[in-house]
Image (cartoon, rainbow, N blue to C red; front, side, top):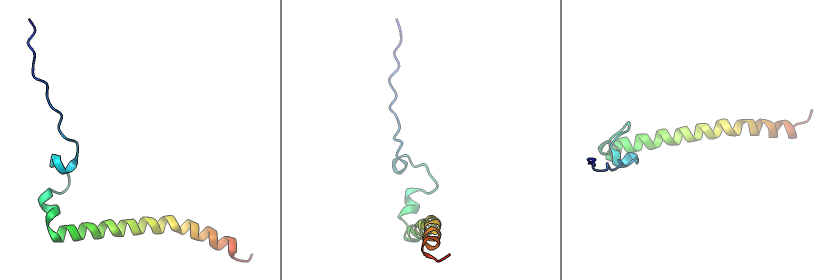
Length: 67
C-alpha cells in the first residue's frame, strides 16, 4: 500500500502578500517612505521620457532646419 502525503498549497506569488521585497508593508505605510518612493519613481519616469524624446526632437529639428 502506498502512503499518500497531503498536497501542498502554493504560496501566493504576489509581493504584497508574500512579505518579500526590498521594503516591508509597514515601511510602505510610512508617509516619509511613501513620499520618497513616489518622488524617485516620478523622477525616473521623467528621465526615461526625456531620454526617449531627445532623439525625436533631434530628428524633428534636423527635418525643419535649413541646410
